[in-house]
Length: 143
Image 1 (tube, rainbow, N blue to C red):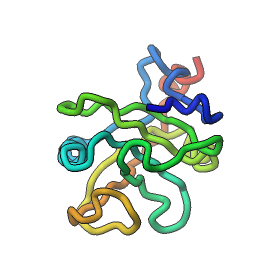
Image 2: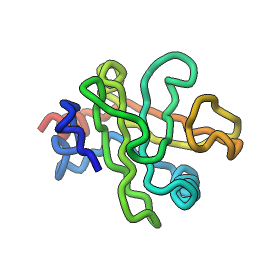
Image 3: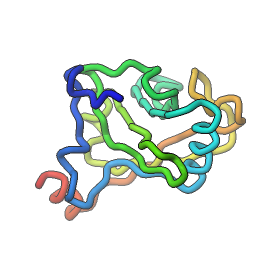
């Protein structure tokens, strides 16, 4: 699986490794859905573009199905109990520039999102819940 480095993408997982501050997390409901999606579709990934409408929601794809490049940032590799491999979470770099001071949590809510995200037929959609990093968390990220 691509780390993004060969495509010129920015990998923020290396910068925060060992600092104890994650940029992205999952709710238990999101983890449950990802396990079902993994069983049906194989390894998974997320991308959030920051575009209008559906582009502002995290979109779940089979790993490698969404091509990442220099305009994308790897925020984290999500560990999901019951899934052997991590689920990479990518974000468009211009959106990350606006959200870099926030901790993001992937959640699931009822309702159908649009687009090509794998959960669409399930009658639910992924969404992001956010909060600002504390001063302590920001210091660890910058360290």
